[in-house]
Image 1 (tube, rainbow, N blue to C red):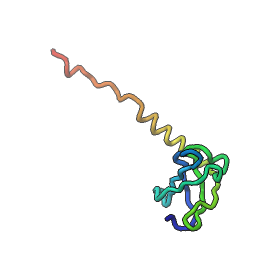
Image 2: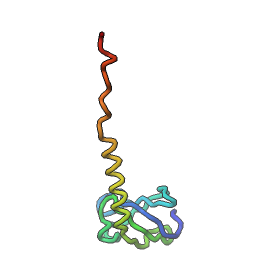
Image 3: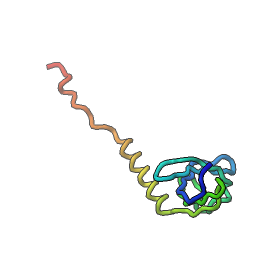
Image 4: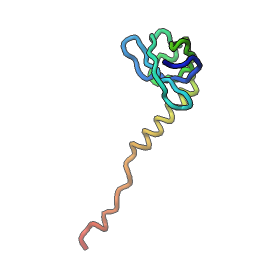
Length: 99
């Protein structure tokens, strides 16, 4: 059970009408919460949205969509993907050829 408090969470995925939130503390995922999609702020009802949430008695008790953090994380993920998808430089095969 997640202790009462305020946390950063990311909408990981949707399963039917439920949202699975990955809850963070100190920059690390610590747990997940499953909440009704309709309980999320309307702008946070998409995958990878970042939300500041309140937890009371181990349950979701409301949240606030964080547009700047959502955008920053989306851009960082896209940048990583772009770097990883680049082809490595072609190896010089001159040493492999018969002289």
